[in-house]
Length: 287
Image (cartoon, rainbow, N blue to C red; front, side, top):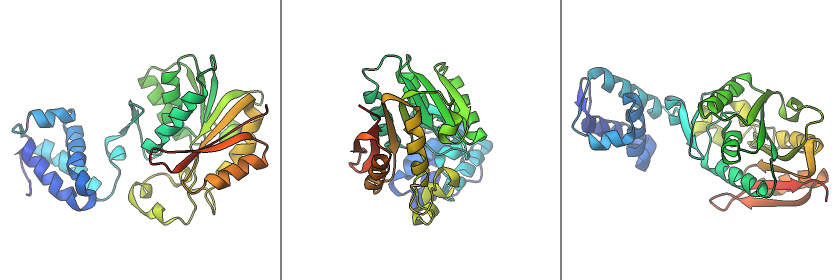
């Protein structure tokens, strides 16, 4: 079906699904609904409730322009400017990574580690859109979170998200990993989802990764360069029995454990993500 004028919601959905069938497969319906709902500034339930509603030519044209962008591979999160993470609606831009479900496992583990600590201090290194820091700040109102990022544009997005969520227990600092932190700053938990993709990884030419900022994805020949920098820096800023918690690639668990061991961390272990792949590694400071 080709639409060059007005149409009903049902007709527009049918056309959109046809356009996205090849690129999105079984997700074509969902993606069509998300993009059309965004174009209409309505919830997806509106499309279900009013399938016979007649839309204007302008509304159809806007929706189809979004569908075209998605058909060309642009991530839905960048098209709509938002992504849900930990039940929080976050603004995202091409200056930030798109928060992913696997990273919710990082937040869940962080909250477990903080369970018995009153008024914990947490640093989130390379915060991007602020997803991790904001999720922790929302769950633990007694927690003081410091979020850092090298990119001023990323920090601006994170600060905007914090303001929209009215979270007051978080501060943002610009700088490269722990260099952004005050020399005497100490934390119960330092957490990071750093770049961990090798520079020649073919996945960089596929899917959403083609559109995301390279500096937030790539970290040297084996993907571990930034983790090698974070591990020794973080140890200086961890309190007694503080913990460093890092997300990494599913095949990097052994390498990350070795880096932590070489810098004297203790009780090191790697934990799985929701698909049971090695995804998180943690290490503690002295007994």
